[in-house]
Image (cartoon, rainbow, N blue to C red):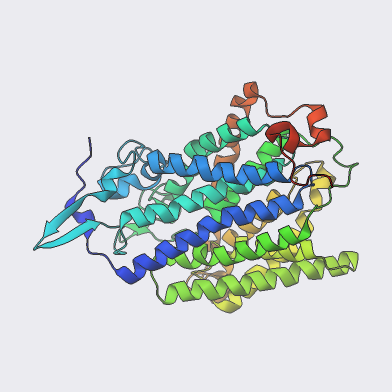
Length: 444
């Protein structure tokens, strides 16, 4: 039985904005197969298929659960007019299956559809766009546990993680929950309310908190629970196909314009600013990463260039709608340097974050989110404003970090009876043959 949606959510459609968001959703969807190439190239030849399959598995499971209850948990209260549950998530059953989004009404002979807020975009299109964010967020985590995890346990994890961690965090940040700028949010509690909103509103334009801090922390927790690859610290894990890595990075950069510019939800100047900032920060981050390699090793590498691209994309994601192009260059350059330095620390701490999910996504995600307190053009410290935006950004990032860490640990422990690790012989022989009975490269 469908819930009748209130009249306030019906409206006419802006064809141009709708077309832009549909195209952006397609670009973001491309990012998950791009990630499969990026991660697959970084893996060893005997593990490449499993690594790519982990991304494709996320495409399958997360798409299904997002349509069934994910959109409802993340944004359902905004359309049904009902409240959420403790500011953490909306009712998963209020829009279960998403069929309700196809309701229409006739007004003066014209058909109106369910639209998303004031955007004049059909809510079903907004669902499509947000679905792709959920998919890539989960796929990113897989790089932290490459080459050693049972595929069936990973599939179960994708369903539990999206339901218990991703959907609530998306609601808290973007759906009017605890990490938003609404009256019931942490920001409002910290600095008060004005005109029905927190005086200082947290900024996460396209997912620095929801996607990258979230995925980075989850990757760290899984790496700790699952344990290191056998031979970690003694074996050289060299990328087996660097052209795959660079192809994946190029496609990620291409898709990321949908990720960031599409988050404007309109084909307008804000989308243009996000596009330019995305290009600028990414280029600066690549230069920053290569500069670190040159100073440290005297050899700027192809893998370093590709990784620098990703670090810049991650860092500018929360900031792309709120900084100037010069600010974007600053955010990207520092991100490239920080992540290039951070990835070497996993050996010092003995944590096998196999493909540097923590060093890139957590480090650059944290930097991009917190840097907004410095360089946001309307509220940043460097633009003559006070400290409040910096404090809010830091608090929101840390709350999200703790939220994800605790719940991911619970999920990881709950899945232990299924078994996380493939056996010793299978790991040495190669996870592709053990888990999928396939090999990427047949012997001549």
